[in-house]
Amino acid sequence: MEKSEYQAFLLYGVTGSGKTEVYLQLIEQALKQEKTAILLVPEISLTPQMLNRFIARFGKQEIAVLHSKLSIGERHDEWERIKAEKAKIVIGARSAIFAPMENIGVIIIDEEHDSSYKAESNPKYDAKEVAKKIAKQMKCPLVLGSATPDIRTYYQAKNEENREIEILALTQRANQSSLPKVQVVDLKQELVNGNRSMLSMDLYTAIEENLKQKRQTILFLNRRGYSTFIMCRNCGYTVKCRNCNISLTYHSYEKKLKCHYCGYEEKVITICPECQSDKIRYFGTGTQKLEQEIQKQFPKASTIRMDIDTVTKKNSHEQILNKFKNENLDILIGTQMVVKGHHFPKVTLVGVMAADSSLNIDDYRANERTFQILTQVARASRTRKFRRKRNHTNLYTRKLCHSMCQRTKL
Image 1 (cartoon, rainbow, N blue to C red):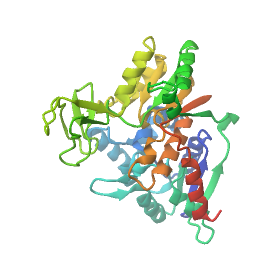
Image 2: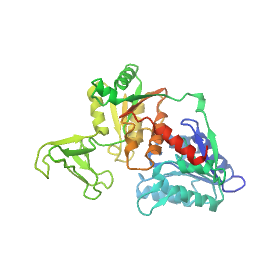
Image 3: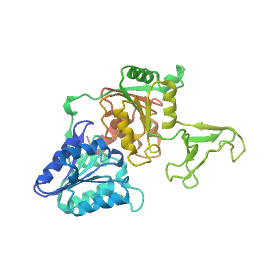
Image 4: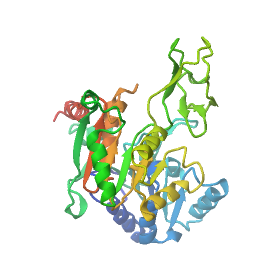
């Protein structure tokens, strides 16, 4: 930064190792040299908790925030503040990389492995590649931070013949705190023992114990809605999206079938359009169904759910998190939103439902994605975490490590 030279760095630190504090000090150093800074974070991680840390360190006037939840007017005001050089620090999602900053001292990309940095809609772009180009033009360092780096980034940092990225490792958690204990439960055995519930007996017991001790619990299920698809048991007809030709997900609260890709929705069917049978059945599990199950098994527990369906209004994301934290609600249920960038001191248990289901999605990087999200989940718990598996395929970490070793010749 002092030499005004481009260099890419991978800040590879375990969860809770203090990467954010490194970002804060880097930005502070840039400001001392009368330079500016850009910090990109995944949209899902742009939480009030994170923003408050930066505002407390640098003041609100120094920071401009850019993300999709801002209105057009708010975005315009922030853009003008940046252009007028009233804001020295830009924090935002992928589009913030295009902020009209001058004299940039450092560009930081937090959770660099996150797929949201790649824009799928027009204009299509990869924010990491754009950041790399801008950093070279501005002659400033580019810092990529992650506890579970993209396997391509990791390869570029480890390839001795043509090393493009310098690796910086944080191997211990801040304050010497220990990593959470993990328990894997095979649900096939649970079924043999007569347990047909969505919860394993170990997880049920742990939630019950947490409730008695007035501690908080997070339940993570990376699938929203009530049922993942509905099917006619008579002829096998499945309701699919007219645009995408994928199964529509049933949402019980709105009584609708929705496509999670294009947003198409239609009313729930009660009669099969193919064979006119009334044997319509619901299959699969989403966060809505999990919420109902928890309310049924723990009627005295206070619960709250956070997914795309519950954060449609402005600031609803912040309101749900504050409600869970400040009102001491017992159980938070949700998708990836509940496990990224949060710190809840009273959370001592995290349950991951159908932890291995993401291994079976049609993505050649399914193993890597699963490893990343489960590692991120681990940071949410202060002491222990239970992970629940649909079957006995407990090989994703070994597969990923083997793949890394082969590609980096370790």
